[in-house]
Amino acid sequence: MSSKVQLDPFVAQAQNDNVTPAQKIEGLHKVIKGAQTGMLTTRASDGHLHARAMTPASPYSNSQVNLVFIANKASPKFQEIQNDNHVNVNFFDTATTHWASLSGTARVIEDRAVIKKYWSSCISSYFGDLGDGVHKGDVNDPRVVAIEVVPDEVRYWLATSGSVSRGAQEIASAVQGEVAVTGELRTITKKEIELIQGLDASAKSK
Image 1 (cartoon, helix red, strand yellow):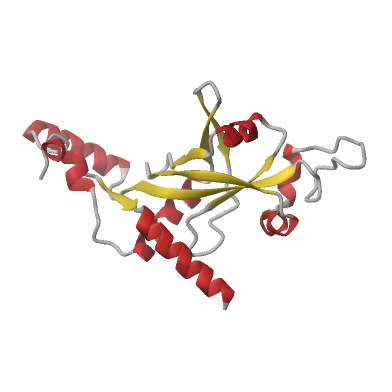
Image 2 (cartoon, rainbow, N blue to C red):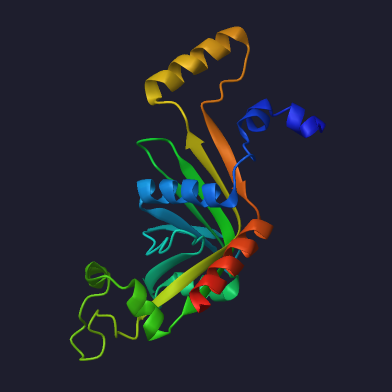
């Protein structure tokens, strides 16, 4: 055990690697569905990080780890993705304290078939009808594109205790000089993501 791990006993005790990739994805979907809205962070050309709240149009299938967002390509985030396509998306469920962080790369999709797959009529309110007969705020509006985030690594936390129980454990552990572990940390590695994506693609091609 490295000295770094010894100095962070919380992470060492909370990390749970004894779960299958399928169980890891199930847990991730639980966090995303509970939080509903995530923060997509991009980097501007001057190095500054910018984040904005966005609701993913996925997970779309039980094995999906990629996230898809419908967005307006006239917004500044597209220039930032073009400058540096490395992004982060994080979620936090205030009701449970579950959280997730997905780090990876983003790509812009203008394929109408893909956009229609993830389109919802309520999204039109973010675009509006400009009255020029072209920018109608519908699925065929040229401003409407998709951002797909392909994670290289996913880390998330599942709380295993309610707020009252968690508070009691933290107080008791503080008194006893122990670490209160009220949940578990899980990591979906790049290798696992590539395996999952390969299996998912193979299943769809059949």
